[in-house]
Length: 119
Image (cartoon, rainbow, N blue to C red; front, side):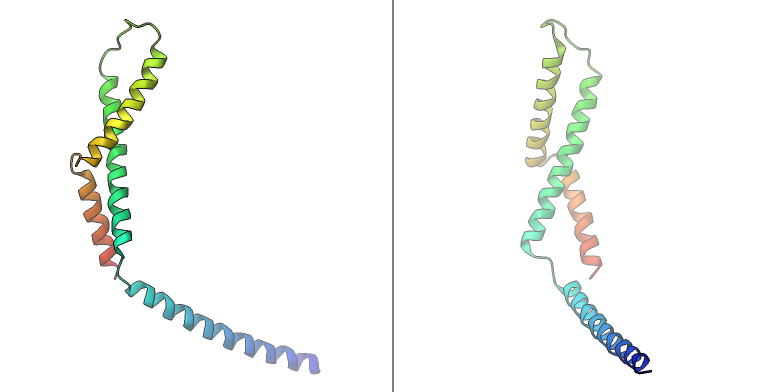
């Protein structure tokens, strides 16, 4: 008989603790949602947008090069292909860093609006 009494008492204690924890969590979540993004977050978003543009530019360069006939003057094309892909990667990074074609700015604006719209 006493065991049942203890069990029901423990249930009420646990449910009160769960309610307190839920309230604390909700308050912390609400305060975190109200905080504005820091300058560091803004810089990370800009850098990530530039990297995404570089990926797009790299893909575009690769596709453009695939339309040009390959020159077999030097013989082995595998080494030339590796060098060409490395060159395309570096060119795309430099183009995106220098301003690119505007995709990074569009990505940044869209993600900033989404981030600010959630607040």
